[in-house]
Image (tube, rainbow, N blue to C red; front, side, top):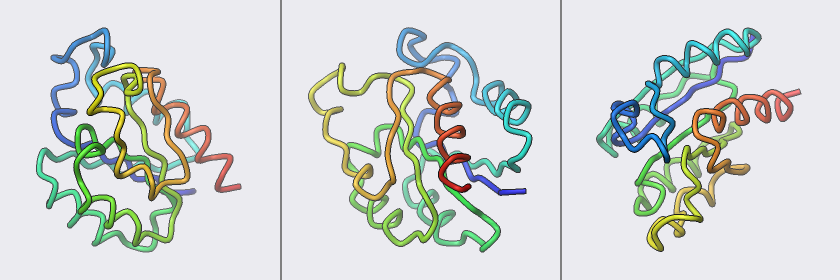
Length: 142
């Protein structure tokens, strides 16, 4: 069974409290529960932090059992060279997800620094962005 790590960045721990038109209005725990049911060929490891350095430390300490990473860096995608560099060190596939359509929002959200060190990104499908990422990760790992 392939082990997939999902990492969520700042403010994604309060997903259900954020603007539902952008973020869907449900908690990530609910999304993760549904992912586990739908993708039962994966084992999931989940981590969330509002602190950039904690996310980098977590990634830098990955063990060899992790086959792929799905990351929603939140606003860090627009500002974090540190996280970009950290992702660049990985030897596993990385897919970036965003719940809102970041290309259809404020101009500063159209700059994606971290995305350069991924195999691709999905944006705009609310919680379904994670489902698409799992589907594509499954295809990529075959």
